[in-house]
Length: 334
Ligand code: NAP
Ligand code: F7E
Image 1 (cartoon, rainbow, N blue to C red):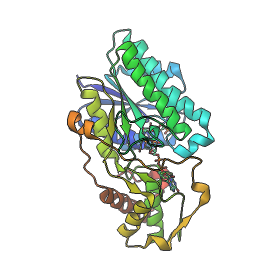
Image 2 (cartoon, rainbow, N blue to C red):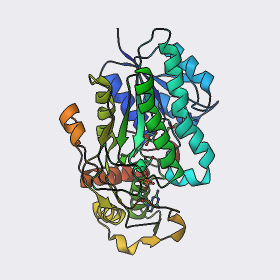
Image 3 (cartoon, rainbow, N blue to C red):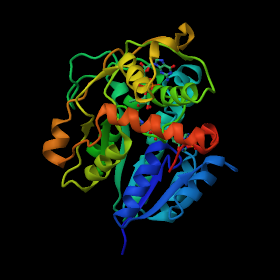
Image 4 (tube, rainbow, N blue to C red):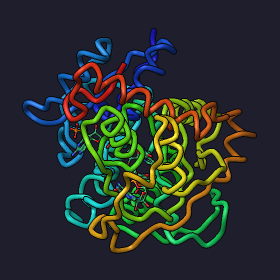
């Protein structure tokens, strides 16, 4: 019988790549979808026709127990979250409820169903934002946490709780501490996609400038398609352990901007405008992963380099806009 996976956050970037990867690996894939008439669910259904949908919300404990009871998954991937860092200052309580407490509710749903005999492996989407103001570079599984946003704090709660359920109940529960990962399916609010869309609009004469915040922040950017393979590998391991996933290379937002404009044959300095309102109350200045443990224990390697990733996103957005697509409606899912 096919193994069964339940994914929260199925309508998001990672949910789509993970679903494709698991379907290709022979899994029966279920996605937890919220809302009465969520347009992102309709879009997901069109693009991932083989994914089955179960209704539920990370804010609603009963719905998660029902979903786990209905699907009877072998593996649960908890990708659902409020994931945009600036929003976490504007809606700090909601972020704590969804991104933090949502982990508790999903772990409880699994614990209740496991006490009736089910054996379910759990993956939690932890984040490099937990490192925040970093104590060392590069960051590994033993680096201390100093989150700089309500989002980072909520993720740290989910991370420690996952570890605690592993230790308290012997659950196969693990966290992937993933560094920034991007793709043509990335939400338009995140800086890589904002830049690739901005460049495409300028190239096609649809815009004349691109407003950005802090150009000095540095991130370890990789390709989302690579990172979902790591999630799956973590749940196939013999023992439940947490892993850092990243490329081990860091670039500034300025370097990202330069590479994106170069990919379209443009000079960024003619178009980029600084906007103080886009700076954050507290910034994460530098992130750079040490993914040695994932490489040696899981055999995981990233396959897409930074320049290749940026060019892929710019080309995809040029195609999307040339074909008259609306990035807010269609994204640029192939
Ligand atoms: P994303 O595109 O923003 O997707 C977030 C998902 O969460 C959406 O499917 C959204 O569904 C769902 N969601 C929001 N509120 C929910 C709720 N109350 N109940 C159930 N689902 C809810 O995020 P992503 O980039 O794919 O990231 C996946 C996960 O990895 C997130 O937990 C994120 O915090 C974490 N992460 C991401 C990165 C990265 O660089 N991408 C790095 C480290 C960790 P709706 O369509 O219903 O809104
Ligand atoms: O910002 C700077 C901004 O919003 C990256 C999420 O997936 O990765 C993501 O969080 C950097 C920051 O991602 C703009 O100040 C400059 O330093 O693309 P971002 P993020 O905050 O790193 C982590 C690992 C997650 O877990 C999160 O869920 O870019 N920046 N100017 C800007 N950022 C945005 N969004 N917009 C700007 O105009």
